[in-house]
Image 1: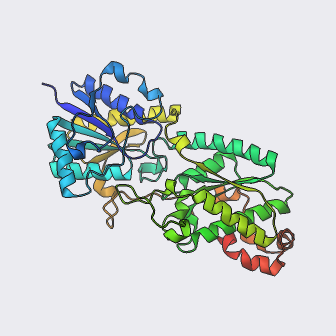
Image 2 (image 1 turned 30 degrees about the horizontal axis):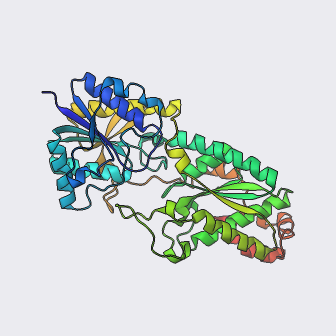
Image 3 (image 1 turned 90 degrees about the vertical axis):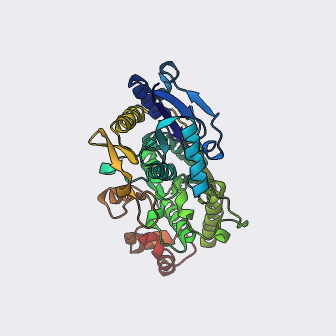
Length: 412
């Protein structure tokens, strides 16, 4: 009787999930294993429901790597919420006869996989394949997470259209991009589309974040006008709202959270908050501008993967199965030197949280400095003459008052 390998997907969708599923299933089947797909991540396992599974065969997965979404769907259920939940999840896997488990997901899914591996002590071999369009996991050689390149490309296409609309209608767009803790996606979309500027959480102070964002945006609008242009697109990472008190984010302070305790930023109208705040800021400056908000995120997550992510994910899927058959467990599969490599999860964890370390944009790097130089936003030289007088002339402020008002924004 062949041993059974199970595959599940947790967290938000990302382009390329089916590539991992397909490659892992094919590699396992050709290695003599029985393969099942578990629907909806850990959701049904933690309740003891073992009926939501499907056999995966060569014909059923042969071409799924070319499609977006996840044939196994996904969920954000936390299997390690408490000991009882974890034990029910493991018991469900045992009832299904699972010997090997491939978990495809981000930080939270990987955390759950780690706990299952620890608790079963090799009885169930577990590997995690990292996935997130946020590009915020600490992979070797600063490699992107799978799905990021496709999401960035699709997002850049959307912003390119917004740029043309902005030019045609003489308005400004505040485009909010997904990215809870990292501004990598917002920055990548901005640079890929040639947007006027990006604002990311890594460059902002801990306190007064939203006010600083509005100052940066207002400064960009004024700088554009001083150059004779009355339109533009700013891409803002949604993570700018992380850590901001609830009463600053919404009138209703009862903010929804997922099973891991994260505030659902997608349910908070960050774009509308920034749009309205920017309108107030510009009015106070005597600047009349049409400002519109636009959220970009859900359009990206189930996009058909680019060839880059197709190739990338197939390598990861094959690498995951080969690591399991070598007897490895509690590891994360990533590419290092272009080859699938099993990384010990312990080395990737943040000691303070027990979760995977978060990779953020390094705002001290030459790469960030180059990106910043391509943007149209206030910089320290703008607050000196002769630039200062031209900027202040677009507002009701004196040059000295303008410099004082935007000193923080120019230095961010």
